Image (tube, rainbow, N blue to C red; front, top):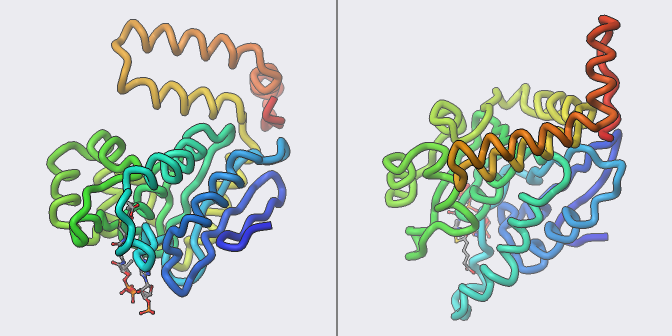
Length: 255
Ligand code: T3D
């Protein structure tokens, strides 16, 4: 069992809660290792992951209490952040980041590495790095300009000001901002939907969307054809078509 995170599974949904609320769930070395471990050892019953924070924040980024003496940030990023981010992007099932409160620095970029980001309206996203003389890391310089364009990415990164959940949604940085009172149920409903969906198709969609930024049209059409070939051989495809023809809801198993 873990110390810096809480991890549980119910009805095919794994919930991973960042659990150092006294420091707004700042990322310690141990928390990074635990997130990485949890995401790389998911039992096969899991068909969706919800990543969220305990207390009033989502994640305040790197724990700054152990940083003054840190001289080799490159090694920390390579040895601890990169495996954590790859565990997010290689996760076999979709990840929802449920951003319950402020997401700052690497905490924001951890959330943005999820497949779907749902934020409470009171949550904010802060590229806080320049406040302490650093540059955005944890994949931020990859994902943010691609999502919202260079003008907004540069503004977020240079000014390091909070961007509200609603603004983030309107820019296309996240999927959805929900009123605080509807947040928990909204996230749960989305998680249930994904956990009951065609898991292998979801995984292929992630691959296609990830690779599209490196591919030209020829390569992307070829990738779609290959992945669709695989989707067409799943049990869920047979079930989906059969259910349509029988005018009933499909019962996907994730196979
Ligand atoms: O290896 C490397 O170092 C490279 C990797 C870098 C990745 C990064 O993420 S760098 C960026 C690090 N993060 C930040 O710079 C954000 C720091 N935190 C804040 O700006 C603010 O705390 C928040 C905007 C997140 C929240 O503000 P607020 O006013 O709602 O809460 P608060 O009072 O500032 O924080 C509550 C407590 O959490 C407070 O402790 P206290 O006074 O109650 O004892 C605060 O010190 C603590 N806390 C917040 N963030 C961190 C933290 N403690 C350690 N590390 C933190 N990142």
